[in-house]
Length: 310
Image 1 (cartoon, one colour):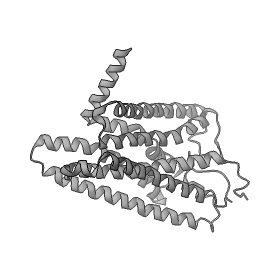
Image 2 (cartoon, helix red, strand yellow):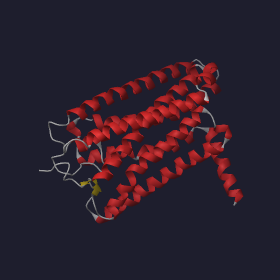
Image 3 (tube, helix red, strand yellow):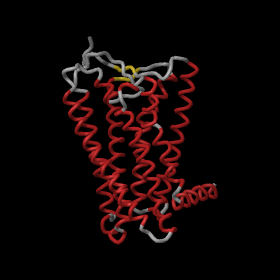
Image 4 (cartoon, one colour):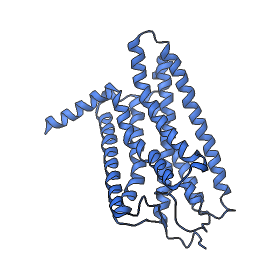
């Protein structure tokens, strides 16, 4: 029998027990992490340095890149260190910090994606009111609200989770500290408070998801009414990357938490968790830069300037 006061560390789920595969896991995750750092770092630097990109859309994209860097940096360094040193352990405080930061960055990203859908809705459906509704002060307030709401949300969940008595061991069935996995260690009669918070969270998340869907339905209707093909192409080129990011983020997250227990297995859970925690921060920069000519031009100018300076 365990209790939370006697637990000094948790044991994370290992991808494999074979040493060669552990090293392969390390190098694979290192490559993904470096790609995420490079891609998001380039987006942040390009937007910060290019005056032409100091618009609401790119301001929110810069915030999204910061959140992507934060979320992947919360998960991957520990996940790479453990197979390298052939261990599964994470300290109690380390687990609490990882849980808080992961929930904070993921929640802030979802709120920010909701704000970005509103930005695209105003830009395409109400272009004459764009400067009024999305001035610099309004953009800062909306971004700050996303970050602050996520901070309070993560603080509430972390404080509640780690106040529960844990009496079912210290082994987690996940490669990082995750709320459902820690709840499995809790005494059966003590997790209803957190379950209630998760239900409220699900309702809030569903509300954001409905807002995004309604926004894009209105955007699609407005785009199809644009008479010129060039105008439709330009509208789609600014909306499709955001829609792709939202779809990747929401679909992988929903499948991870809502998949039927009948198809659940440790190996499938690991693969799905990688897809919703590790893959989006690495591929989001690629998605945004593929169809955005303005961002590609600014990025090329920045790279050319750096090479010429050398």
